[in-house]
Length: 361
Image 1 (tube, rainbow, N blue to C red):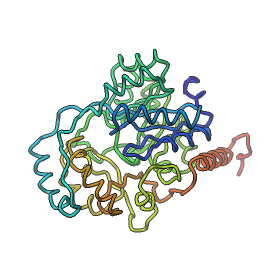
Image 2 (tube, rainbow, N blue to C red):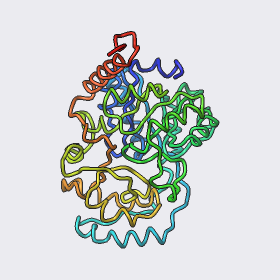
Image 3 (cartoon, helix red, strand yellow):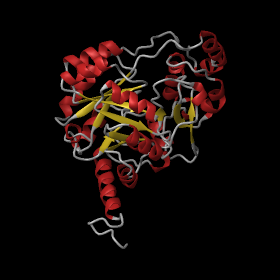
Image 4 (cartoon, rainbow, N blue to C red):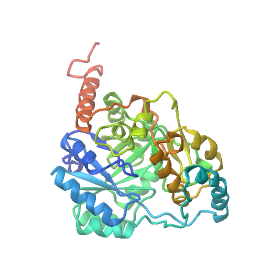
């Protein structure tokens, strides 16, 4: 990875930005203070809400950090399909005693306003999800002194990121929890995503950009594996979801290791875009019927998810989690970074031929 980026954080550990209130300032600060790169998630926030969190984070740490932004989404949803899904969810609304949300609540997530804030008040790193920004956007951030990363789920998407002029690419494997950061939402490709190690190898051969590997990583040994595959750093989300500083609901944190939730699945049930979460009642009952309609479905189900959270009902919440969720550890975030770093160092020394003593073992 370019020295400009690696110089920002001494450990090759990036805390994934998890939207919906998980990646709060205290979490990002703890990770950055421990030597990783903490991230705020601007998704689903207003521009002012993002700005206030940046100010709060700066009050907690002087270390570098990042902010993640969602790209505006095209008008591709079929209103009739969204209406049919809304009719199906009427029983959920009645059960939770709430109304369904307005599916036409906006498609751009306040992108222009957030970009204006980030240009006026530059942060060290900005990453993008759900597409690739224009060269003009990336160049403007570079002039402001900000390094940029863009999520890619295929080698072709990584090439688009390189052509646009980003400083690095986040290679997101299909194992990752939460939303897949595909540049285009193509229902025909659902379930065909690449595993992380294969994706990292393909991206490394496709582009000359530094690669941050993301998807299902929970242990330092796994970080060693993606570094050996050619990544320059590893991004972990679910591993930090269970930490003390995480803003995740306690029900969500407990569900990660609850024997009741034995597997994850990619679903459109909660948002209309493929996202990996723990399989619960809502996902089982509605996943097969949810249309390809993001963020329409996200807006539609928002009151249901909020009501389920207030009731402490894990069966109605979007329990985003990666495939390694059963390996989650309830630790302070800074301590988790230290443990991951120790595990990484131990894994490296076990490599045959490594000068630290792994040869012949």
